[in-house]
Length: 430
Image (cartoon, one colour):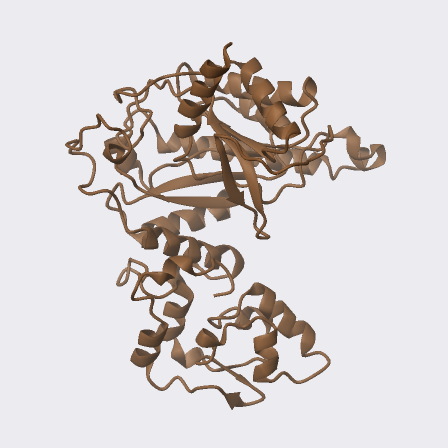
């Protein structure tokens, strides 16, 4: 194939993949098999940045196998009725492209999805063949994230998990009603079924690795199955669900399927990135999409679920179903529960420390460790990483206040992101 043809494929199929947010390398130690050295820093077309849970920035080759799709989901740029250029890789092309980019250290991993161009098992088979060829023939030892095609069988998911570090099945929209409206060819039951199949297989493989037979034979006796787990993506703002419904769904997914991540993607109208796109589809909301701050607040609320041990019901209620656009959800909870404060940092347990705005998980652990040998002062907290701009109203150190929380309205005003600066806040230590 001519280089210009391959470059056009990369341009089309990387552009078609960029709206899927559900890719990150967090949670994996890498493929357990072939090795691979990394060197260089260049980034070609089709490479995206993603972040691990420990804050590292990594680069992934993020492409579709094909952007041909028989489904007609209203929100998707690749839907069957869209007037866009169509293309597809061959397995050989993708293997060579990924291997070459990896050798040059353009990438640290591959994120591979596809349009539904045929029966789900046929599409899934192509993704699996690509991953398997990379592992067994190309000697590729980098990260691989494969998309589970809705409707594919458990056998295919089992095979995919042997070659990929992470799998994901995008739930797309929060309710079956919304899927029926915007993606009538997709089924929430089918998507959740794929998640459940993965969860069952993951448990099966982990159990097999704990058996006496496996332990006596060593680590090579039983294969790893998708060591980085599974993730999913929710589109925010394409339908009328409130934040409470979204957070309740995420909480349920984490609990039932032990997902590693739920990704939130602010809805972007197809007309904003397809020149010939008509904006008159009555199924879609008017305008471009929700404020990005809504997506940001959902990520912060999600962090509270996963790492700060909040329940969904503590974050939002029937009376207040949307997250506050101007303050982070942890501060919003604190202002509604001022009778819980102030917290004395020299006596509080870890779970209680996590409730203080401005003190994150790392800082809470440092506090627990440091106070074993000394009584902590307010200056100690600052050096440990506490964000005292927020924490000052909610804690004492040795009985000393920075400032008493005697005026909730004033505190809220001082901590509000009225100019939209909330988008710059970290997702943790808040």
